Structures are given as structure tokens and as C-alpha cells.
Amino acid sequence: MKKIGFIGLGIMGKAMALNLIKAGFSVTVWNRDLDKCAALVAKGAQQANSPRELTETCDITFTIVSDPAAALAICEGPDGVIAGIGNGRSYIDMSTVDDVTSQKIAKAITEAGGRFLEAPVSGTKKPAEDGTLIILAAGDETLYQDALPAFNVMGKMSPYIGEVGQGAKMKLVVNMMMGGMLSIFSEGMSLGLKAGLDGPQILDILGAGAISNPMFKGKGEMLLAENYTTSFPLKHMQKDLRLAISLGEQLNLALPNAAISNEIFKQAIQAGFSDEDIAAIFKVYK
Ligand code: NAP
Image 1 (cartoon, helix red, strand yellow):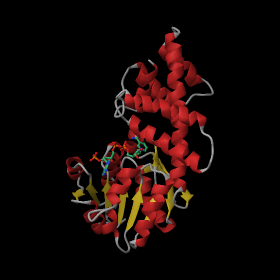
Image 2 (cartoon, protein in one colour):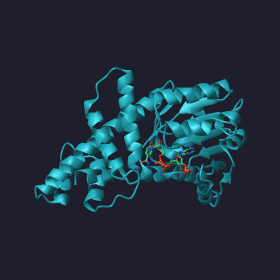
Image 3 (cartoon, protein in one colour):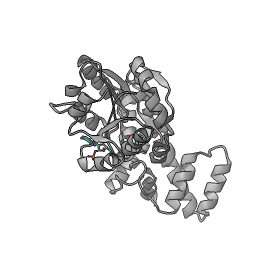
Image 4 (cartoon, protein in one colour):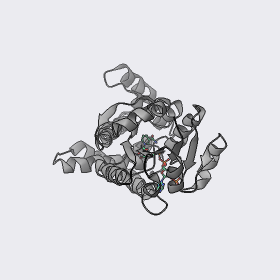
């Protein structure tokens, strides 16, 4: 593949960009806090001074930033992605945002002569490091084909979901379920522990039955160890629940469980756990 740009070197972006470098791609990086570029430059990346400079000099630019406001912020303005994209260049936004934000960015990119794909990811820090993310691509199918070599480095599967917006919706469905599961799991763990049951034994029994899943195992071990080291920041899960609820509102669909889970995640944010791992939701129940 030609020259790759990478914007957003947070928990996910740093690991994903590193894998692209390791796989031999020519990668240029930019992050709002420019200090975070140094670790990637040390591994062979080049550094751009703005999103505009990056998109002007790269054939395909990948981005993964916090939320809709961040995704729009890096696109807009004289130093933004849209100012640099131009004819023949391409933009792939891997941030978790809503379909409306994604469509707005897609419109601006294509009007500026570029190609656009949304590609939010399922999987957390470890799958990002291991290159085993699930990449939910939607938008320009020719760009999807061109991006597959990079997707194959970052992920274990990258299904094509359809038109712009469908990838965002798929991601929100996945994370709405995840937030709800984590919320009831934490409540159940709290009940079990307060009732005098043994924590590791609860996890063993859950793990042997029909509701066994890797998240209950991984987050369960974390909450028993009171280790909330961040893989997936709690504030981002609350953002995903909020966006899923908003999608439900657009469709006039009641989402009562998601609404309750969202309130619990909001309580966790109010309690100061925003930047801790989603497992810190358990502390609300303690
Ligand atoms: P993170 O560690 O919090 O990193 C956020 C990134 O967004 C940083 O590079 C940050 O720049 C940048 N950013 C925030 N606001 C910005 C703005 N206004 N302008 C420019 N850049 C801005 O988040 P993450 O965990 O990597 O997650 C990134 C995205 O992936 C989110 O949409 C999240 O929901 C999604 N996601 C995360 C996980 C996970 O497990 N972590 C899994 C799947 C999907 P600075 O460094 O300058 O602050």
C-alpha cells in the first residue's frame, strides 16, 4: 500500500499505528498532544504538524479519536483533515461515533474530492496490540478494498457492512449490549459477594455455564483484584450508551435496559471514575 497517515494515538490508536509500522507500512502520525507521537517516531514513523499536513501527504489516513466532537474537530478548520484531503486521497474514521456524525464527515470528505470509509472497531487494548480487532467497515467499497491490507494487520476480521452509517450503528448495537451486560454483571457480583459467596468461585461457575463470556471473566478478575487499569475508558462506554439511546430515539424505539445502564455509567463518571477502565462500574455498586 501507499503512504498511510494515522491520527489519534490514544490507547487504541497507538497500538494500531504501531502494528502498521511493524508490518512495514510507511506511516505518518499526528496527535493533538504531539508528545504522544515520539514513541511512534522512535519506531520509524514520520510526524506531521497538523491533520491538514498529514492528509496532504498521505494516500490513506486512518483516525481513531474519542467521540463525535473530537472526530469533527480534527476534520474542520484551516488545519483540518478536510482542508488537506484533496482529489485522490482517502479518509477512514475508526472512532466510535453516531451515524449522523459519520455521514456529516463523509459528505465533507467526498465534496472535497476524497473517498470516505467509516470503520469503528470492536475489541479493546489487547486485541489492538495483537492485531485481532473486529473492524466494521462501511462506505466507499473501492476504498474498503484498498484498505484491506492495513485492516488485515490491525484486525482479525473486517466485514463490509454497507453504506456510511451502518458501521457506526453496528458498533453502537454491540457496545449497548456490552454496557448492559457489564452493568448487570457488576450488580450480580456485588450481590454475590455481599451474600458471602466466594468471588473466584462465582467466576468459575459463571465460566462453566451458558452465560460464560470473555468479558465476564476478564472484568470479573479485575474487579476482584480491585485493578481498574484502563483498557477501555469508562467515559467512552457512557458515550456509546448515550449514542445508542439517541439512535433508539431517532427510530422511536424504547431501550429501557440501555437507559438504566447509561444512568449507572453516568453515576460512575460523577463519582470520578471516567478515566478508569469500564470495570470500575463495579465501584458504584460497592
Ligand atoms: P483515548 O485513549 O481516550 O484516546 C483518545 C484520543 O482522541 C487521543 O488521541 C486524544 O488526543 C484524541 N482526542 C480527543 N479529543 C480530541 C480533540 N478535540 N481533537 C483532537 N484529538 C482529540 O481513547 P481510546 O480508548 O483510544 O478510544 C478511541 C476511540 O475508540 C473512541 O471512540 C472509543 O470509543 C473507541 N474504542 C475504544 C476501545 C477501547 O477499548 N479503548 C475499544 C473500541 C473502540 P490527546 O492525546 O491529545 O488527548
